[in-house]
Length: 54
Image 1 (cartoon, rainbow, N blue to C red):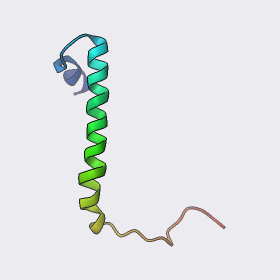
Image 2: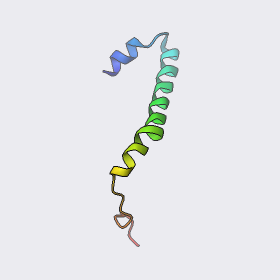
Image 3: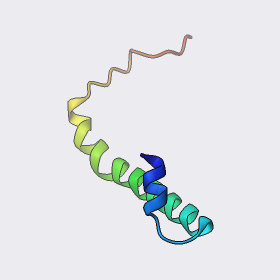
């Protein structure tokens, strides 16, 4: 799958690298700004469930 995306990107290796970094950044921003806020009401976050021991 990743090789197919790499082949579909236009330009040489440097351009493909920059485009792939831009695409990854946009995907991350989309997750943080859109998807995660939509899912937050459906996830039960319990502050007592911590891995830290005191």
